[in-house]
Amino acid sequence: MAIKKITRGLDKIEVGDVAVDGGPGTTLAALGLSDRDSAVTLIEEEPTIDRLYAHEIDEPLDVEVTGGTKQLLFTVVDPDLDTLAKIFGGTVTGTGATATYELPSSKSILDQTVKITPRKGLVITMARAAVYGKINADFAKAAKFAVDIVAEALQPAKAGVGSLTFGPEKV
Image 1 (spheres, rainbow, N blue to C red):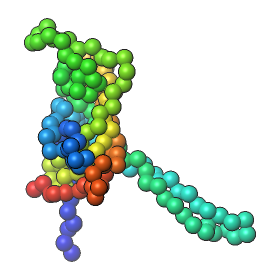
Image 2 (cartoon, helix red, strand yellow; image 1 turned 90 degrees about the vertical axis):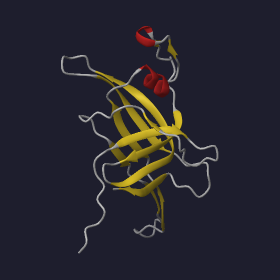
Image 3 (spheres, rainbow, N blue to C red; image 1 turned 45 degrees about the horizontal axis):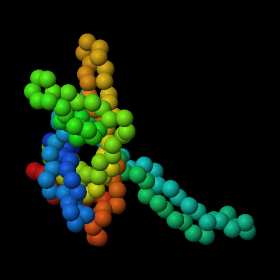
Image 4 (cartoon, rainbow, N blue to C red; image 1 turned 120 degrees about the vertical axis):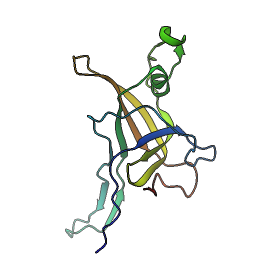
């Protein structure tokens, strides 16, 4: 029996603007390095199941299923000021060692394409995702300042494009 395709490890996670036609974007870049001590997970939540029952019988007459939310969770371990501005909105002021960034008072949600490239196996692309960040800072001696990223799959605007695409294969 042949072994099925195995997908494992992480090479990179890239994000970028959704294409003008509503399909997956092609100009993508990594936000930074992902934290090896944090989970990098793509999780589909439990679906919502709506069963139609009659009083006279115990078995459902009909069942409707709505798929669960699909979220990618990862942590950028080396965020710089430009990464903070990309994820949280706002702009970097100044240049070089004197540059600063101020966190806006409102949370920003980006409409982005997200591409997960494993070390080997199937590349996974979210054609359109709601992307936002959360500060994850610990200033203990062996700790770090990081940004947790959440990317939630959305319905693509382009007809015939799924929310998740598996493949091509990275060898």
